[in-house]
Length: 351
Image (cartoon, rainbow, N blue to C red; front, side, top):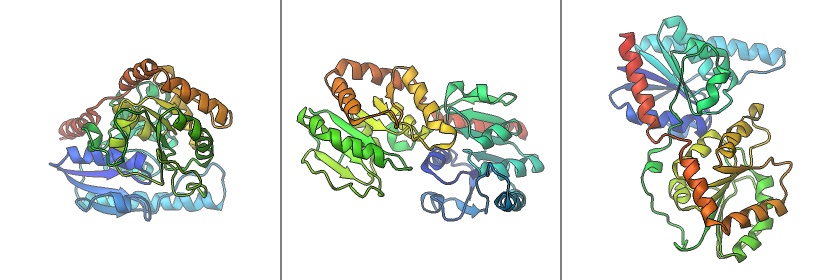
């Protein structure tokens, strides 16, 4: 059985695809990516990585648009050749611009496509090509309203396997103190970082420990020092960190939100203001409406407001517990298994 996975660019696209791939060990898997993106380092050597020159679509017409169109055509031809050469039976994609040539090539070859859309507001490629997919699997239940005519089902979003089991934490954090984790996300969060550093002295005075993941583009990352304040550009063991956290301050990418839900971590969400079509705000609103998180727009949030909101929550463990219970209802722990079974079922029907 042969499968082509088209997933590229960010952890939000790659980690769910890798989680599904782990469930499909009986398949021979080929991987479709783009040169010089994260898949070059994240995709295991078990899967052969093929790259195509496709780019994101432009909203304005011009020479660049023509170049992108020509690369799209070239990419469709390349994917179609891969399908024939490796006798691919199905394409699984996690959306983004790499999904476009994958879906078009699959349609030309008459093989099924399963597309997983992790954001509440589906991306442009998902909205444009969803009707040509056998199934669009959704990360959020309500997203089907944006995909009229498509066959959809809710499966939540897969997370890495380590999130599904307790993970030891290698940071010196006592068990009996509240832990605040600050997560900027892959797009960076310098504005949030600055606010957090302004608030940190008060939170520390209340006895909290802060793990602040600043990203690698913050020139002031080392400006604040305290024995219970850990400033790190990144941290590998995110599963263990969120499992231990009492509260997260975070962007609202779909992958991060799913990890928060799986680890039952209450959150203050600050959507990335420059995300395509403001999709992080749509994601965050689902969590806020469920009573699982508080949402603040970056342009409206001040250090004083953030400081007070965190203090109120630290002083109200019962509120944090209620949020923890509500956030757990927003995900399915067996998402990867559900998607893998959907792949098997779709291939079986095709045969």
